[in-house]
Length: 70
Image: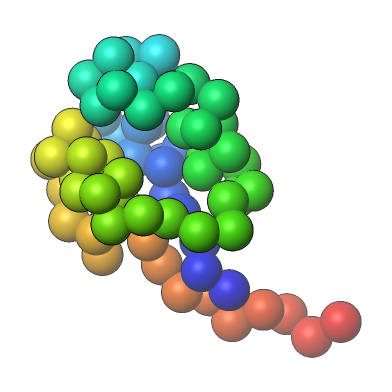
């Protein structure tokens, strides 16, 4: 499972989702979908905007986790 670590990055940078929206031009709703792991896809342009605004690398924002057996 691919996990987007947006909530952790926002906490580390002490930013609100509204502030991140203002910095990136990405809507608050779209950021909430990413934060809540509801996104089915992530555009490279969006990833680039997030990394620039959060001063991080894609590897810090995205992680791979093994899914637990069902």
